[in-house]
Amino acid sequence: QVRLVESGGGLVQPGETLTLSCAASGSGFRANAMAWYRQAPGKQRELVARITRGGSTNYADSVQGRFTISRDNTKNTVYLQMNSLKPEDTAVYYCNAIDIGSGKGYWGQGTQVTVSS
Image (tube, rainbow, N blue to C red; front, side, top):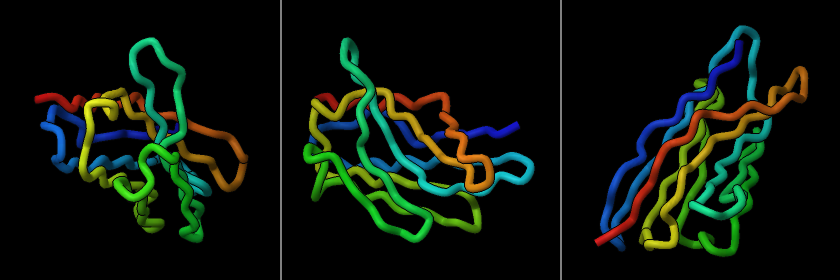
């Protein structure tokens, strides 16, 4: 059974930094592309950032230049460093990972990020 466990969410003030982590585990699981999505109250889930196994990245326009996605393939772990946080970044952040072997996608349980003064 594949599990994705996120950590690092919390309450911060505008302008501060927060780093999220997501560790994927499971027998035989190797992550291909990994990504972070977020969902704010009353809104659809949206892609925040994505990284391929080789390290190519892409970002939503709203976070470009402020957020950085990275990964450690040896640990099946993906990170999201969020700088200069804004109140509009408030959302539940979800990790997603694609298994190399099956092509199946998996989701984490989500971690709350709240940006408020």
